[in-house]
Amino acid sequence: MPTTKKENVYFGLMMCSGMVVFMTFYNLITNGLIGSISLTGILSQLVLVFITASLLELFVVGPVAKKIALSLPYDKSKKGLVILSLAFCMVSGMVLCMSLYGLGTAYFSNSLMSDSLLDSYLSLVFKNFIFAFPLQLLVVGPLVRYLFKKFVKGKTMKEVKLEYSIPSK
Image 1 (spheres, one colour):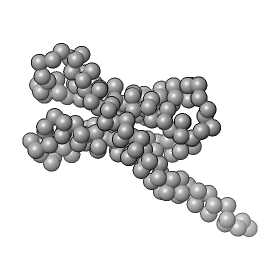
Image 2: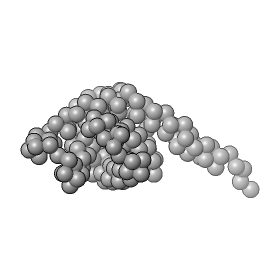
Image 3: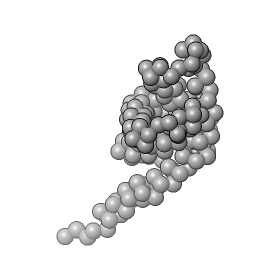
């Protein structure tokens, strides 16, 4: 888990990239758009969604979710409970915000069905949450924590050890 602001940014960006890739393809498949959008269109969507999600995660949802998750009454010494509550709060906040983003892009591209905006939004939130929460808990979360420990935390610890192992004159 990140301990500094810099590590927190790296961790957030890693988590965002994993979730954005999976969620973008999930939404393309569930809306039947995977064959009708060009590779350039998919890549531009990935970039736009990544920028939006990263900004939301770093400045809005992330801080609020952490504050809520860490204020809940449970034993904070149990790492699994901390991860579960953080994941639930982060996924909930990001699904609520990014579903609004998806609804907006669907509205402006005239691809909304005849449902009301509220019905479309609630349906989108439900579909995204039932995919995003298990994805976060079982795939992206563990993968990002592993990669973070191996490449970011490991690098930081090696730099610290190297700094203290250089003999001074």
